[in-house]
Length: 189
Image 1: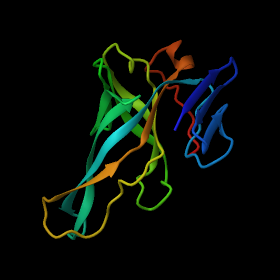
Image 2: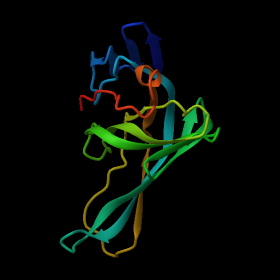
Image 3: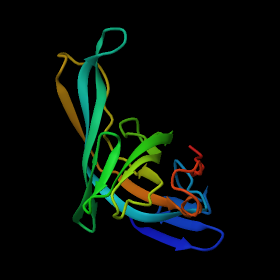
Image 4: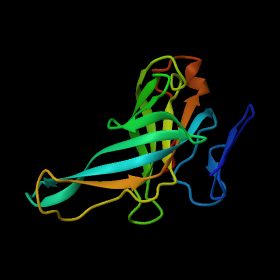
């Protein structure tokens, strides 16, 4: 999957491979779960190699079932480790900067076994590195990771591999005022 970003005064265009094209905040072709607002710019795109961890626990009715516990992944760019992904959901860059996200939109993966594509607004930030100005994170192009059904023994774990793409955006108009303002990207999930 390749990334091309172009900026103009009136829009940003993001192209992720052959299937997903976000131009001026609107899907042009292919299957995409969300739109990128015209005032957002991609500042980092990484590939994640990791897993979704599930735990066998009783559901509200008392029946044992696999329940999502947490993600764990290494963030890669050009084959080099540039950070990590962890429960929160959170992301930390190798430079020490980190963000925690809150899901604001979701779309199903391509198959029932794929975890959903997500759009997350950043709710917490730390550090002065590359993630300092991030306002939105998108989890795209998921393959696998989903797991559900009955399980036999409470407290047991199941690990499902996932290789999604993570895109980190900054919202230029928000930065002019306050990073804590109510300005956020529009989601069309």
